[in-house]
Image (tube, rainbow, N blue to C red):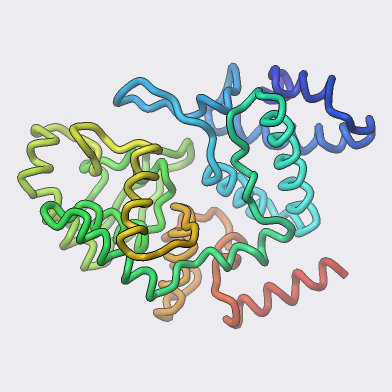
Length: 313
């Protein structure tokens, strides 16, 4: 049985949402698809959107967020869904979660500010400009010039494109300085993947992990790479940290952690790196999601836009 369709969320929505039966039937197919994705991600018995992520360090829980929904949309693109289908899936989930929020069944709707329609045409606005990247890196250094951990954290995001949970779960044992690579095995219930480190990241990360502050934190154990106040950083802490960094950098617009994946692809493409190499760095199973990360005006992006236009016609 589908974990979402058997949930109290769906049952209450199905009984109380003011929609025609034919519309509810269409919604159900979309919700079933999302439910299958949740089960593939490890949600087996009960779905709880307010207590979605378990934080081992302090035994607390955090809600489902926009980054998780972004990853779901990426999975739909990998499956080859058309713009029309992407639009439909995002709209249905935004409406469903909005209903749950309106009746008090969940505390927040992770899709409230999610842009739609045409995910493939909107996402390119998420790239952090090179000027902003420099400002963020400088601000991250100023925030903690002692250990430089936030500078390393931002540099890691910009060059490796890690997802949020991959970043939070990253441990020293996953890093190979000999081969200049990081093995991604935590934070995602998918096959292990490998990302390559630039020479700058390798140097800065190695210096950080040999810093007395990190050595004291790890106490000779294989601990999480990033910590604060004696605990590994979690979703709430990383949000507060990045907010402070943006304030120092003078950046007022909204930047999400997932935007760094788009920016990583943009920076690599700007340096003339082959799109297949970018695909491997982002660990996309198929090329389609990688193409959606390309900057406007690039030859591949133009081809993508032409194909999208043809599909709409």
